[in-house]
Length: 521
Image (cartoon, rainbow, N blue to C red; front, side, top):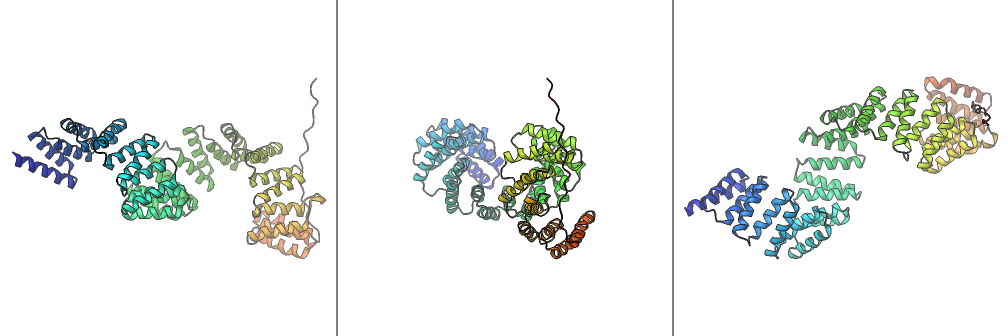
């Protein structure tokens, strides 16, 4: 009988080493049948059950082991680990503490208890245990790794990186340590180091989906979109139903302006998870950018159905309606977005554009002002309000707004062109300044390689304002050549003026003020 018992135990260990846990469980079960009073047999079968993922059954075997041997520290330790896997964290704490009491010089239960404290957000107790574990065994991978996880959970990424670094020093082939260190490095914006760690993690585990996922995200953060596409593609080979990977690969394709592939990926993501608004929103953006406006409206409408309190969807649908000249619907969407997020500027900006196109310049100016109040560094909002004020005939205020935009971004060619145009062509004599107009127009053209017809047109106007008509004619001829067919006639009108030795004066059809009405008595 003893020989048969020993054979079963030996066979159980062999099966366990091979990962054939069902056979190991059966072998240890046969041994228990022969000697049901042996605590170690329950311990071994409990380990095989835990390795097979049968944690409740493992707990039962470890419990039997400690009932037979109440001082069996390893059984308490392993029962604690099985409790952790089952989510029974309080029971795990009790068992780890009992194991520590029985073997105070063993760092393993101290480290295990620290990990449980971390999961329970009791970080003071966790760090105290990690410190004790490192004093007992200064070069233990698991302790550094677990403490790094705790630091990471607290957002203490410098400390996390230091512990993960110690962990990989002890065990340089542990892929997850590189992966987790990369996450903390990324959080610290040390993205080049994060990529290096993720690449190491992939060398150690070439089929690790998480490493591909995280490296793709870091590539995206670094604006290396083609590399991000490659990593998302590898991830999708490993996990073809990863909806988020399709969505984010679609975003990368959109960044590369490959909207056909972007739409295809967003569509696959939607098919995998129809209730996720994100890929549908992103598909709407790609449709809008390719001027497939009805499809964009359809997607943003579905996003609104899925997430009715999302102001971004109303904003984007508002812009789609605006592009389709459906101004009332655009105004309604922008207004709803403002109601949902009164502090956001983008909806006010869109509503300002819609009011201006509709001819309500006062309302347009008010909304542009609302954008500036919420974001005083928005050069686009200052330029928008300037253009509206110019249409209203408030030329001084328009120039002041354009100059405010220049202060925000001195090298934006569009803003420089706006300022130069006002100073070269404004109907008010006191606001024109040919020398300043020429300086800004030259800079705008330099920034755009003299290829933007509107900017070259302004440059010619600046030369004309200075009386340098030969230069004005030369540059206006260039502007005519660059201009699209629909604008050539307007440009040629100015060319005729310059040939006649006359500068151009902008003509603004200022709307008449609304008539005042007497208030009722």
